[in-house]
Image (tube, rainbow, N blue to C red; front, top):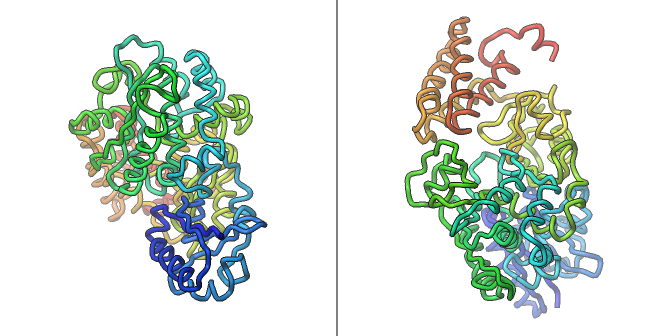
Length: 518
C-alpha cells in the first residue's frame, strides 16, 4: 500500500486541497491502486501548497502546487511511486527551505496526521509529560526558567517566572489559559500548531497544570480560525479518551481538564487582561495592572497565560532537557522562534530558526526576494504595531535585546515584506486608523490619540509638513507610548515613528544628514 499525504491546513484548503484529495482518491480507485490517503498538517512551505507527498523507500517525495487538473497526469507519470513529473520537487526533507531550518517546536508539523495519537506518541509525544509527572512542581518551574524560554507572544517575559508565581499563590482554584487570539498581520504559527500538531499544545498545557497545581485550562481561539477550533475540540476529545485529561492524568493523582473558547473577534483581546475579560463573558476591555493575572487572573484566581508557541515548546524542553533548548539562540534570547514570512515575497511560509538569524537571510535565503521582482524596501516585524525596518537594519540579529536597542520588536515573529512601491506615510496613517478601530476605549491616549494621530498624518500627507505638525505627531506618539494602559496604544506609535524616521521622503520631508548616512 502506498501512502499519499494531502495537507488539511487552512492555507492548503484555501488553495483547493480538499478537491485534490478527493480527485486522488477517485483516480486511485478507478485505476485499482492500493492507496492510503492521509490528511497531514502543512509543512509550512506555503509557496508550494497544496504540497502532495508520496511515501517511498527513499523518503517522502513532494509534488507542489497540485490542483485537480494535475491529478490524471500525475497518475499517468506514476507519481504514486515517486516518479518524475513537472510538479516533482524531490524528497521534501531535502528541500533547502526546510532542510536548513532548526525545527524543535515544529519538528512534527506536516509529518503526521494531526489527530492521530499514535503518530504523536511514535514521534516523541508525551515524553515530556511523563518526565514532569515524576518531578516536583518547583523543579519543573526551575527547569523552565533554566531553559530560557520567554513568552513567544511578543512580550518575551520569562515563562518560568509566571509559572513559579502561580505555583506559589495560595488559592482553591488555578487556571492555565492559552492565548490563541493570533491577530497580527503576517502571523500564522499558532494556527499551524493548532491545525497540524494540536497534541503538542495539549501536552504543554497539561504540563503547565501539573507544575503549578491548576486543574482547568482554556484555549482562547480567535473566531476567524474555525478549522483550528474544530481540530482542537476533536483532539481534546481523543486525548480525554486516551486518559491524558480528566480526574487522573495518565493514571496519576493529577487532575486537569481542558476546554476551547471561541474568541469575541476583537484585536485587543490578544492582550492578556482583555482576553480574560472576554473569557469571563464580558466585553474585552484591558484591566489595569497590578494585580497581575498570575495572582488575580481568570475569575480572580491565579492564572498562567501563555501563547500557543510558548506552551507548545514546553514538551520538547522537558523531553530533552533545559540545557538542550538553552543551547540554541543568543544572549538572553534562547531557543528558536518560528518566523513567518509574508507580504511581497516569493516564498512565503514558516521558518523555525534559533535567535540570531537576520532579516536579510530570511528575506533572501528563505523568501527568495520579492514576489514583484522589485527591490525590497521595508520589512515590518512584529505585527501591525511593529516597526518598519529599512535595509540598513536588516543585518541586526533577530534577538529581543538587539532589536530593542534600535526601537524595534521581534514580537510574534511575523515579517511582512514591502517593495519600493510602498508608501510608508500611508502605512503609518493606517497604523493609527487600525488603533482607532481596535482600541477598547478604556484609556484616553489610545482612544483619542489614535484618532488625532490619523488626522495629523493626513494633514502632513496633504502637504502641511511644517515643524508644528511634525512636532505635534512626535509628541502625540510619545504620549501614547507613555500613557496607554496596554500595548495597543503603547505600540501603535512604533510603525509611525519608524516610518517617519527612516522614510521621511514619503511624508514630503527632506532627509537629514544622519538619515542620509543610514
